[in-house]
Image (cartoon, rainbow, N blue to C red; front, side, top):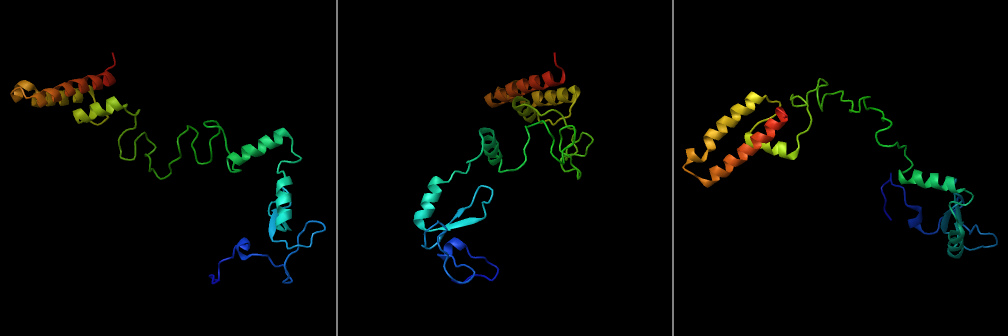
Length: 196
């Protein structure tokens, strides 16, 4: 097998493992003098330290071995919970802020990528509450972007009504449908700006 000089071979792929003196390992099972080709962890505290067994004894060892032996129910539960998060620290959502998060719940943005820290988004537009889908659709129909005043909305509405009114377009059905959309969009936007 040709391997790069910096690569380490997988010991399991090489067949029987040789001990330091060049002789094949013998089975670690008491009274067995067979070849110790298969490894098994010594205990749950020594997962990287191994016994070396022959095939029959590694099967027997694995069948009888219990990772949780000697642990009470709460210790087992705690170990299982640590495994569910890959033994990394965790916290309940929204309770403890991780490192790098500002105290108000917003991420600390030292470089201004997500905003300038003065209530403006990265594109310079003032931040506000996000629009709902009907509000977003209404803004698109009227061709507006927040922030806007009631006077700006009314001026845009008048402009679009004049352009798309069915009487101004010879009773065209597509203009009539567009006119209805503009009226509905205007009502949605005005409810946001001037709630009743």
